[in-house]
Length: 105
Image (cartoon, rainbow, N blue to C red; front, top):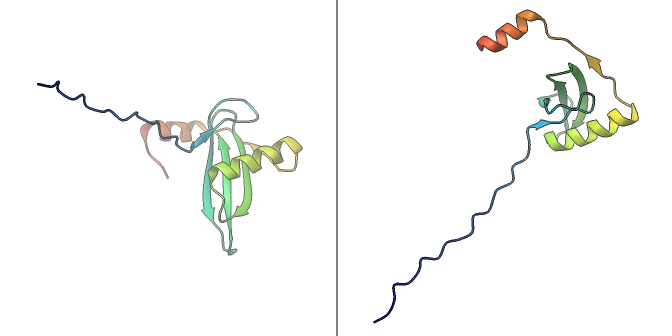
């Protein structure tokens, strides 16, 4: 008579996901979002970079193949060199209330 055979368990591997929220180079908080929009120029798209904490806002024109991570790397390089125009927009009270309630215009 033999023993019952033990069941083999595969080791669980963690799947690394590409981040969607990044660290802001101005304030250091992890609230920087990147939104990509189409342009009329073939082969390029517009990247809108905004920080929810300090109000940093920038727009870049990037190749169509770029993803959010590529845009973030290019934005950090341009921000540190001072080659990009950055605005600081504060949210009005009406926009903040609309976001809390879940309404969007």
